[in-house]
Image (tube, rainbow, N blue to C red; front, side, top):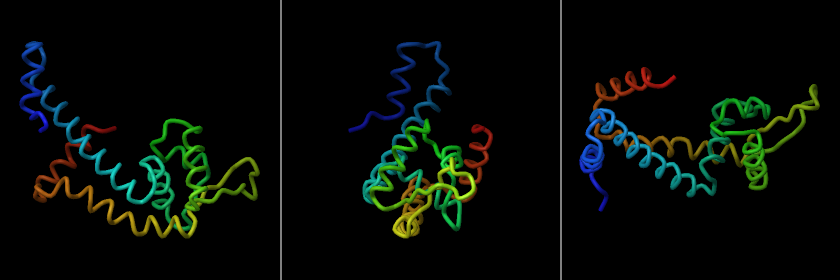
Length: 159
């Protein structure tokens, strides 16, 4: 059985009464929600034979629209991966799975273009709606007003 959020908050406050209760409570909520979101993403991606960072690369290419391709530099700027090396590693694995292809730009030979293959497009066409349905389950208890308020709050919190 998981420890309740209230128990975590009370534990923190019992060891340091100078802590701001609201901050402890919000941090605890965000950590718990982040764990739920992470678990859903990880399990979802496993079902499609990719990991979360590979899915991020596929999703970035897919949401770029037809022809579902970007230069390696553009792809690096639009994904959540920490480095070019991490991106190269993911592209290599996705290429080996037949989900992406690489080619040198005809004009700028130094530039590499990464594109979804037909299998990659098919995977993302099927996975995208299912992915957002899974994520949407986290918000099923909220009404339209609450969802609007939550989006407004996140717009204020996030850069």
